[in-house]
Every structure is written in C-alpha cells, then in structure tokens.
Image 1 (cartoon, rainbow, N blue to C red):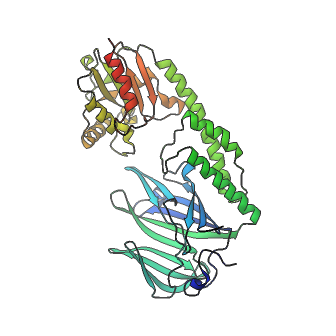
Image 2: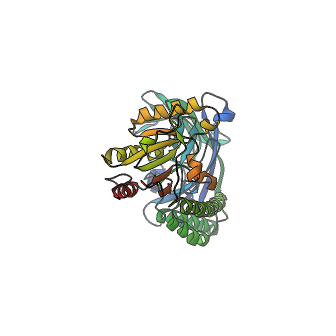
Image 3: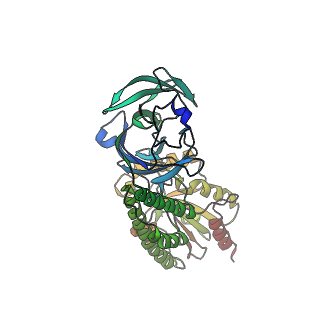
Amino acid sequence: MLSAFAPAWLLACAITAAPIEHGTQLVYQGTFDADKGDPFVTRKNFELTVLFTEPAEGDATAYWMLRESGRGGWQWPDRFGRVPVDGNGRFRGDGGPALLYQRPEGNSVVPFALPIAPLDQMWKVGAKWEEGRLTYEVQEQGAINGSAAWRVEAHNPYGRVQTFWVDEQSPVVVASTRRVFIGRGEPHELQYELKDRTVLSAEELAQATATLDQLISLRDALAFQPRTLQVDWDKQQLERLREDLPKIPAAGKPVVLAQVLKDAGEDAKAQKNRTSAVDAMKKNAVGQEIGPLKLTDFTGKPLDAELTKDKVVILHFWSYQDAPLEEPYGQIGYLDFLNRRIDDAPITILGVVVNDRLAEGQRASAVQGAKRLRSFMNLGYTIVLDDGALKQLGDPRVADAKLPLFVVIGRDGKVLEYHVGNYEVDRDRGLKQLEDVAKSAANEK
C-alpha cells in the first residue's frame, strides 16, 4: 500500500518502496545518559510509541506517546501529542516529544525529533543535504539489528552530533545515537532503537486515534501549558476532568494509552483531595490572630519586631535555595517587583527560607544558598529563616501540596490571605491579587 506521505514519482529517486503504511505503530526503547558518572545513577530510560495515519486530505498525522523512568519525568498531559506530517515526510509545528532530565543543579528539557527521515532526499552513499546548522551525509549501506539500512551522519561546524540508521524500504529510523549538551555544557548521549513495528487493525486504529484526539481536546480545554513541571489544577479544571475523563474510551492499543488514562484519573482524584485539604487549612488560618512569628535572621536571632510592628506583613514561604533553581523560582522576581511598588506603604515583605537543611543541622549551607540566590536575583526584600512560623500558620505540605505559600497578615495581627502555589501573573502589575490584598489592608484605619 502506497502511503500518501509522498507523491509516487518522488519515491523512485528517494526511498525505494512505500514509506509508511496507514496504521503503522512503531515502538522505540532508548536511554539518555551522561558521559561521566555511574550509569546506574545518571541514566534515564524511555519508551516512545509513534502511530501514523494517512491524511484524509492535506497533511498526514503522527501521534506519539512517551514513557520515562529515572531522573524525573513529565506528568500525564505532557506524555502524548499529535504532529502533522507534510508530503515530504517532514514534521510541522512544535508538538514533538521531549524528555525531562533532573540534575542536582536543576531540570533540563531534552526535545528530540520523531524518528522519520525526509522523503525528498536522495538515498545513496555520499548523498548530502543541509537543514539549519546541520549537514547530513549518507555514509554507507549496510545492516543493523538484522535490517538493511542506510547509515547517516549529521555534523555541525564543530563535529559529528548524530549517527542514525534508516530502513532501506521506508523512511523509518531504526536506530539513532545523538550527542546532547545540557546544564553547563555537560555531554550526554541520547540513544534509541526500534523494538517493534506493527500495523493496527482498522478497529484498533480507530479506537487509538479517538482516545488520543479526545485526550488532546481535553488538554486544550484545560488550557494546559506544555512542559509544565508542576501541574496544579484549579477547581474549574478539576470539575472538567471529573466530567470528561470517564467519557474517553480506553484503547486496547497502544498499551501505553491505558497507563496515561489511569494516571490522569489518579492525578485528578489526588488533586481534588489535596485542594479540599488546603481549603480547610485556609479556612482555619484566615481570620486567626497569630501572635509573634517564629522567625529568625541568618545568625539565628529572633526576628526584629520593628520590622513588622504596625505593618501589613507578606510572608513568602519557599526553599530559597540556589540549586537546583527551578522555574518559576517561587515567583520571587515578581515579589521583588511588588516590593518596589509598595513605596512608603506600611507593608513588609519577608521571604521565609523553608529548607530541609535547616532541620538536618546544615543551617550554614542553607543560609549560604539563600544568600547566593538573593545576590543572583538582586532581591531587595528581607529574607529570614523559618523557626516554626510555617507550622503556626499551617504547613500545606502535610496535605501533599507544594510550596510556595503566601500569607498576608494585617496590621491587627490577623491572617488575611493564605495562598498555596503561584499566583496568576498580571501583565502590568505582576502579583496583582496579592498586591490588592496587602494595599487594601495597609489603607485601613
């Protein structure tokens, strides 16, 4: 069966047979590994499933699904996607897969192209073409893992960056090894091989594409931002998940889809329970008079009462560690912007260091990390250490929620705001909701 991925005349001078049959499912297994260090520690394993459909009109479609293990991994909305493919077998858009790789210094996103070679190139030894800053050359015709294939190398101005093998009978990449530099230029290797190639039946394909299309539509309806490290659904999004997830049919193949649906359901349930617990903590905190806050300066001395006397106090509980420094940095940049906007209003902003090292007897290390972060971000507000204040106000982590926590205390010593997680950012005013609460309280007589 000739695929509509390319016109028939083009096949004679490029790939020697039909490119990819409608309903083809490709399953790859691979690793992402640092050049240095123990592979047991540095290695990430992954499995990529790609499903191809012929176009009803215009572009074809490639669906992809990703499973990761080791060194972190995406939450369910980032583990699948859909990419259009033009008549030359080239992918359009930015919807391809990417690995999430956690390092001690932070997280790295490692995007990679779907494993299909272009159809509009000559396939013979010595053939060359350029794309972007890379030059590709067919090095030899041989075999890999029992398949006849072309070996292709890709070079940039500094040397070889990738070697991959392309099936002689179609544009399917059967194996690939690529050099990747992340962090501060640390070399890593991205490697994968084709482990399974099957053609789904018409019924299996219809079920799979229906499931994937509905998942993608739901993800779009939730206004999900791709490659989000921490997914926190609001009440409206949780209600949408509760209503729509049960309506999505489970496909028998690809089997990875069943896990995505299971993870989505478990995530929605867990977040609903967490939201209810946090709401209860907020209800318990707001309106309560807290009394002296259990905070210290970097030397361990109790917080100077003059800093908060007769003022509205904004507390920002977060790790305040310089490494790993992860987006969106606990919104400390926007908090510093607010600090510069409050002018002479009776408002004090305190960044509160909540760091495991404080409890582990590594106070000096925690303090140095906070100081480095303050210097790096050029923060103008005061940073102090938690000495029990978070427990006073209600630690959201006991409900499996994550910091930051913003707390606003009025001039009368009562809690006005208890907000877990990041605020929605206003284009002009930054943390507008927080600013409005604080300034309104500051203006009260």
